[in-house]
Image (cartoon, rainbow, N blue to C red; front, side, top):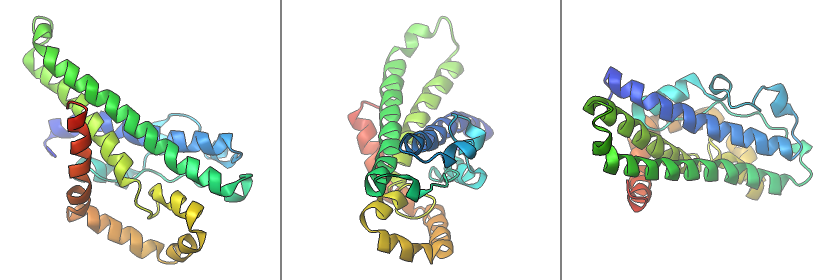
Length: 208
């Protein structure tokens, strides 16, 4: 990650798009399945201020991995809790993955045709646009993969509630320690070591 001011500014659009889409999708799916509480929380709008967590977003910009503001679900509002939790787990992952793929393909097309735009835009502007497209693709794919971890506030906890609710209950007892461990996992480069090769493998397959 480039932690210069310009690097941070180019990362911000990707972070906003990634986190907002992820949490908005989760809230919309939960609402459609019967959890009206997400509407009360103001999560049924693609408003970044409602969906983003300040610390989690800083982690995303600085370390490339972080988290969103968790949606407070009411599991007993679902007719079929297991099915609901599975959908709430799967759909945000798919949205981030698809959006990441679209931006990756777009970045590749833009880069290959950038010289045709040289008469209209200066080189620095072309590089900036290409970098923003590329970073947005990277953030979406990486966030989709990272969110599979079953530690609150990541989306993997919903999968755990769906398939092993007794494990999920036990893990809530150690929530604070697990969050701290997750933060250190990111800071020490563990997240990048595990997920970067997968994410960049996917992106290479998409031509980025």
